[in-house]
Picture 1 (cartoon, one colour):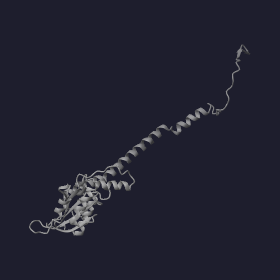
Picture 2: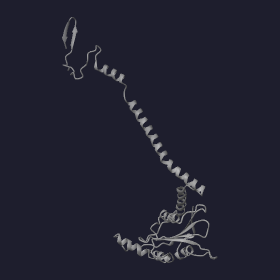
Picture 3: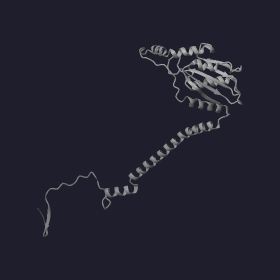
Length: 264
């Protein structure tokens, strides 16, 4: 499965985009399109371009009304999109033979992937080729808010979407694309594991460093016991009372002179 934004796919004319998609003959009388489906539209497919153009032209008024409903200041001016529509095609391999129901369901999912699921769109099935394909024309103006869709990275989003569809069917047609996205998925899957392992290693190192510091600062039991005994006993083993009051000096010294004792 492949997706392609057609040349001039982002344009300002719904008439030209839908005129090509809904053209019944290819110039030699061959039937070109089969089923047609409209999304968020009230008009028939042949008149859908008028309704979609009217929505794009009324973007400022729709924005002002939406702000008023939200209770915001209605005087603020809105903006209109420079381009009004996006035109792209979804195609399958000739051997895939998808049913029309599956093709239209896939097209609606592609609109959701682009953030255009609530926008106005026309999906047309073409049957003039062996490869089944659809044309999707979607307005870039939101019909309820008047805001313009952001199409940044739309080609990448559609390419990755096609890979996911093939992966779901377990039938890859683009092996290089499958390898690219599987490598990306594996890198994303491994990234949290590597971060977690690095975190656990760091925590183990910190715990070991804290334990080493604790053991280094704590005295051994034997040296502590000897230190206590040397301070708490006399040479003869008599315990010393730490609360014993010290003997006060009277200022009188006794001296022995000759055979007697005299005080000085």
